Image (cartoon, rainbow, N blue to C red; front, top):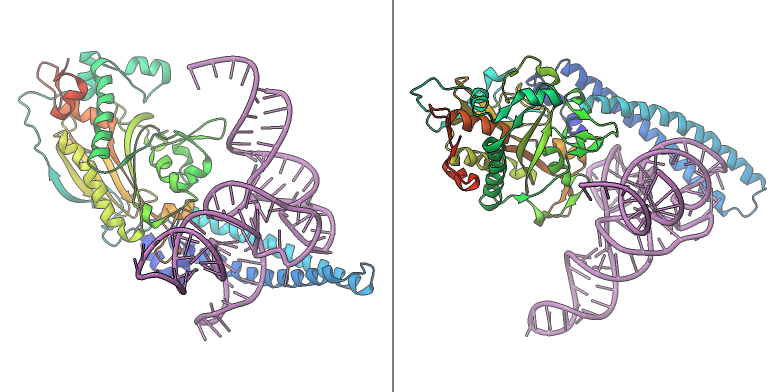
Length: 424
RNA sequence: GGAGAGAUGGCUGAGCGGUUGAAAGCACCGGUCUUGAAAACCGGCAAUGGGGCAACCCAUUCCAGAGUUCGAAUCUCUGUCUCUCCGCCA
C-alpha cells in the first residue's frame, strides 16, 4: 500500500508514476484521495476539539461531590450536546476512511526509476542470456509428449479426479519433483544463507491482504468455506511472518526459503497454456523471501535474483534475465527481474522465476516494522522471488535433457538426489 | 463435537467505573561508582493520528465491533483468536 503521507506531500509525482503503471483514472483517483484526506483531517481536528471539551468537563464532573447540584446537571447537559456533535462527525469520518481505503487498497506500487516504462512485456529489457541452447539432432518433443511416452505424466486421470489444469506425475518424474525441492532448498540454505521454513498454505484473509492478493485479485484465488484462502505462492506466508511485528535492527536481514504447494484459479487465463503442465491450478514452488531495511533493498534484490539464478546454472539450463517494464510488473512490485528458461518445444524462453522488491508496499499493508538504530519504528522492505518454480523446472529438464530414444538424462547436480543418471 | 479458562506496553504480569497510558518485574538506553566489567544505586523507556519552527500540545488505542454511563482496561452484548480437559481423527 502506498503511503498516504507521501502522496499528500507530492501528489504530482504519484500521478506520474501511476501513469507509468497504466492505471485507469489514476489522476482522478489521486485527486479524489487528496480531497478525501483533506476533508478527513478537517473533520478529525474538529472532532478532537470536541472530544477534548467532553473529556475536561467529564473530569470536572468527577470532582463534584453533589451529583444533584445545579452545576452538575447543567454540565451534564452540556456534555450530551457535545457528544451528539462528536458522533455526527464520527459518521462522516468513518465514511472518509472507507473512501480512502477503497482507493489506497487498490492502487499498485509505483515503479522504481530504473524500471523501463511500457504497457506490457514488449517493453521488458533483456539484461543477459546465460547457458548454451542445445542444438538438437532430432525434432525435440514437448514435455507432455515425453511424459506420456514414458507413462510418467498422466493428464487423463488427473482430469478424471480433479478436472482440467491438474496433473499426475509417476515414477521417476514424480521423484524428480522431490529431488528438485531438496536440491533447491539445500543450495539456498547452505550457499545462499536462507533459513528453511515450512509454512501453512491456508491463511486468513488479512494475510492475503498483507501481501496484496486481496482485495483486488480475489477472483484469482481459491477460498475455503471456512473463510481461509489457499496461497498462490508461499511468498504470502513467508512475508507475513513479520506482519504486525517490530523487528530488532540486529535481526535483519531475515531470509526465508520454503517449498510449498501453490494454488491459482487462473481465472483470466482461459485458453492460455492449455496443453501440458505449464499452467496448473496446483503446483510446487520453492520461494525466497528477504526482509531488509529499505536502504538495502536493491542490493538485496540483486542478491536474491542471483540466488535464484544459481539454481539454473547448476542445473545447466539455458536462461535469460529480463527487467520487467512498469506495466508488466505485479501489483506490489516496484522492480522485478524475471528469469526465463529455454523451452525447446516452444522455441522460446518462459518465466520460471520472478524476483521483486516490494519496497515498503507490503510492509505498510501488514504493519511490518523494524527499530532503527535511533530507536524509531520504520517500515521494512520486503522482497520475494521463486527459487524456482518446480513444475516448470521439471518441464525444462525433460525438454532440454531429452534423448532421441525418449529417455531423459538427469542433470549432474541432481543425480545423487535421484540415485540415477537417467529417466526411463 | 461437549465442558471450561483467557486475550493488558518488546516480554512476564497487576488492575477498585473517575489525573490509569496503565503497578511491578525482565529486557533495553543514559548516569553514578569501578583501571575496566559485573553488581548496586539513580533516571529514562508504548503505538498511531493531528497541530506547532521548536520545547511541546491534543486525540485515539488495554483482541475487534456495538452498547450502558457525564466518565469504561474495568459493566452488558456480539464476533474473532488462543489455551486446558473430554470425545473423534491424521
